[in-house]
Figure (tube, one colour):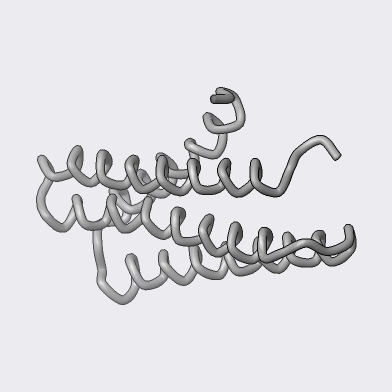
Length: 121
């Protein structure tokens, strides 16, 4: 085993916290465009953090065999994508918030996934 369960949990928590920090930063950056843009940017990044937390909770639910862990990972990914797509539908369709800000927040939060695995700390 190359990685412990505790190390995976710590990495997931770090990614979620960084995504929430990016949500706040992007929201503040879009505040110059207006309150609705700031809300859209924050919400776009926050739904990624929500999806990541759903994935982490589902994946790290407990110890089990390889097949069960793979099943949890796949179901966690499905939950993550449902949360993100559902959140985008709500942001863009239901609340009619600005799409550019929402997509920018979403992309900025997803960039954390790339950076988290690049820099180990």
